Image (tube, rainbow, N blue to C red; front, side, top):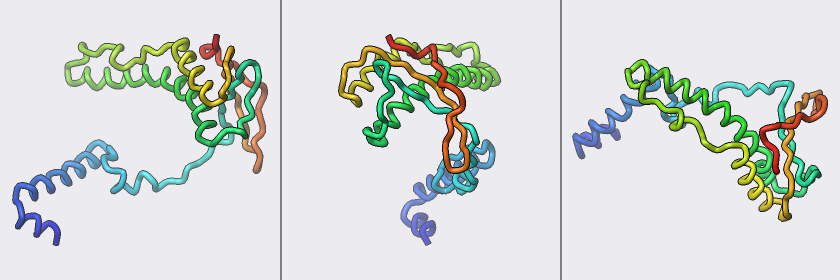
Length: 175
């Protein structure tokens, strides 16, 4: 048995190993933290349910929507997911700050919390300049204007049907 051999080899390593295992058991029991996803069946135990309505980002480069079929899956993913993740980060920054503030306030160090530690200082102009540079790498052309739209889609049997017109995201517009 491994534990018996480890004990005979080094009592110190045996204690460290057992302490490591017990700490993960304690974390998973006490706080519900999935410390080791390899050992956690719960990470993969549920069925993923799709919503009937989806939200998708659309981009227009120089007034034209690019033909996404000519790009690799990874390129398409980067082109469409980057603005989505940026918008999500705007919401999550405040949520993380509020969560951390409440936790640190309970242990008495909430006064030391500063928003600058949790809130990204990247504004939409900075993001769009960076995003323009990224898109130029994919489309291999100069970019004068970028418009990002959000569109709602509906699963209809085996097809995806657009719901209404795309909505321009006003915080993300270049130039």
